[in-house]
Image (tube, rainbow, N blue to C red; front, side, top):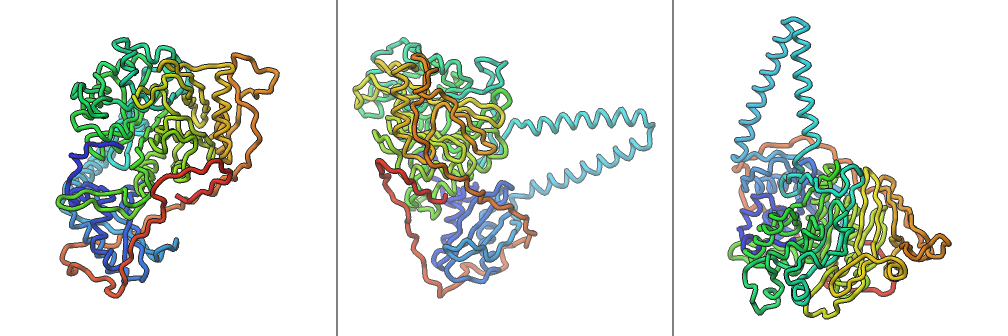
Length: 596
């Protein structure tokens, strides 16, 4: 995610009151940490707040619960109403106790008023029903029929849903009607790597904005096409001398994207993080004015975190995007800013407390979830172990496709639990002065979706003088052979094309083998590879949550603060079990998977 840094310097209290889970965690832990106790905060799909408390010596459960609830009560937050508190020993998976509590605050007075209104409405409905029973059966049947039909329509509209609840706030679903073939029920998605139109590319393009993607008809034929955009579209400091200023483009360059059929861009990348507030806002507005959606950036952290949810031919597709710093698993990269204080490190890896929430909130409300990661080491053909752990953990949480970019070269692709992971799509059109080569090989990803079915295909691309085109025959097979070679290190490398059934996590290669007599020079095929050992699907770790009874309505004067829960307990220093810098194993066969 990328957001305007100057807009995020709010106080810890304000951040916690707004529902920021990292801020809430620190708000509670300020008093708990000195007692050797730590708390992690997440939000359940039911809307309640879940607090997992870990300790080395068990404190009095009732006093601990009251203390945590009192800390939440002091926030007087309209978004904090129900909380489920669980306790366990550090490092143990066994929950010792759990309690559900309702938090009362003045900010919920409006909610009670709405509840009273609802009760009056239900009483009115009862009076209407009783009156209908007293009149003639024919008239009553007519009125009841109209009434039932009307509420049936409302119910269907509610199920169809124009809004989706996310981990941040409700997001409106975009109804995408600009499709190549409305009569074809299949939804086609395209994904390309990095686009940088500055430097030598802009010298070639000049004002001929149709030229860069003129030979990529595959993008114009897709229902939704996406790229990673690394240029700000702004009028400001176009003649600057810094590297960032030199990458600035006149907003007219948005026509390169519109003429090329691009519908969606990722802005969660290293270039966007250097944007000034005005530059970022102008870039987003320029894209919006041309009907191009953006994801992964915004004016605030919450806006940058929001997914883009697009409905195409009756299928809801959610796009999420994250930058390298959003997914680093060491605790020092996660911070909450407050006035007159240094950044506060969170004690929870971001994937568990951030990406996980985003995916889980969406899973039962959309048909497909696409996660973009701008990550990795430049010019490396293999992902680091930490990337593989994150990608697979993303699938474990419910994502359907993982797409990576940033390394500027192609990396391998694998199938994990019946879902594709493409670690890097490489450069698509890249004109940075540090990369003088205008001719190179790359690929784009094509995903075809039907209800509960997916077809995934990597299309080989040859870039000549910064102009990409899909190639077939020997050139195309050479690129696919390279992808197959660097993908062979995975337990189940992704062969292309491949059909996937997400229901039973099965994947079937549907291409023509290169040694087949049916192969033709103008047909793309994947070279024959030895079969890799298959991993048996792991059992679902998810457990059914049971609703606990509400425990208490708390008030501010129940006990004194600060509360010493266990004065003898030693303070525990957080240890970082993760490697801070990515590294590469090349080549390797066994890929150990860490639980996410």
